Length: 399
Image 1: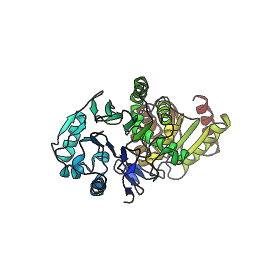
Image 2: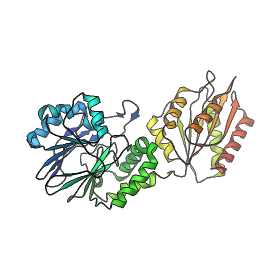
Image 3: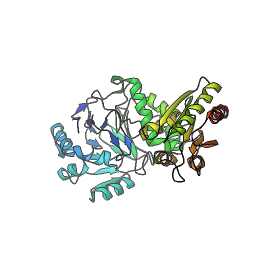
Image 4: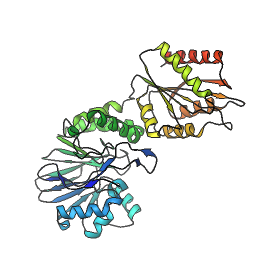
């Protein structure tokens, strides 16, 4: 694994103590692909009292503790704040607690449960909840409930005087950068990675996101900087990511239709091409994107579905079912609870022909408004392909 761990000052009293992992390529086990590396952000706050917010992943634990010792005498750390128990942020906690076993850990009750369950240690947990405060002397930390954003144990914290929101996974991205700040990163790439992260992590909680954004705005907290758990820190116009989340949470879509399919003898692919032709004829302005589900990463597929106002999903019938890549994708999106999107199924068959109906049913279970389905026998001839073109015309007219 590549990367760097070092103390990087955010200002005179706050130091980033995280890890930039340039080589990281997967998250949530092997479930999703990461394109641009990532970072695991931990923050050291010095005032009359000293607090450490989060740690890093376990593979970097020894390095993290060593670098932390170079930055500060560990005995001078008065408080540890665990914004959640997830191993991404708590992985170095066992190594750190071997050095300072009695240091109190401030976290939610669910985070204490998570940490006990993972590490089998009954550390000095101090339970906090929404509105709890922790004085550091001249500055004060206020805890903000983030339940189910994304986990049941999540919390964020706001630091007074500096007016910094330590937002936990909220406003994160998987993006490695040696400069750490949003104004030093490629703006287009940053926004795309932020949207991708939102799609994969927060789409199932859209309603909660919408509520939380309203709550943060109603609290009227000054946020001169937003420091998330992963990716770059929002220093320049930090509220831009708050506004982006507010937009993404409300049945977001672009003028895009995605066609997602798997095929065996190219029959289903030919259907997809003909359907797309019909869509183009009916609406030349709509963006049409094709994705072979067996050749495209799941994270990319889910992100493109998030951006789409409608999708078409196709598979030939195989063993009275559908292709495994399509089945896997449908299982993924079933848990995403997409809202305000329309869909249709299509597919070819030789004998039994169940695929389109199976896909339609799974799309309905996933929250899509299903318009219709289209199936053709064997290898579609010109008449069948003309029918597919018409299907595309009718589909786009209904979205």
